Length: 167
View 1 (cartoon, rainbow, N blue to C red):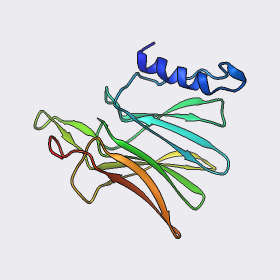
View 2: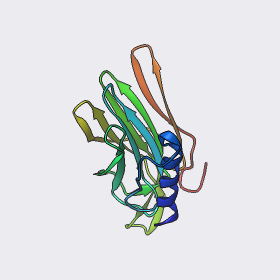
View 3: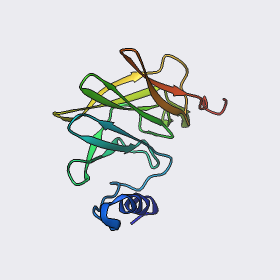
């Protein structure tokens, strides 16, 4: 078991009810520099872990209503690490968003910042890969991410970070 897989197991162990381990769960692949967020609806809560190193094209989800059962979801953006993650709710749907990060550009043989935002949708029917969008601004890595609701509008915010090797 890799250190990262061990750490996710330890955190789940410590949060289990009754003072002991109630669930065993681990990431499908040990990663670092990854991001995590949660999407919650009226009937389910799902934790998302992904966009770490080593880079893969999947995100691990853990369903809080199904004994923390792990599922792997494929995303369409660049395989990258050092992304920001947040969630937001719109109506009956909740979304997990992973933005920015660093990917390997095979054309230039360099690591570059990304402006991809991969969006996963969670509703009462399940969890789905929803869409791939791009930031309107420059590509960034090592972002902070959060969400805010203003009136009836919800926003995912990605801020800070670095553009390749400059701030």
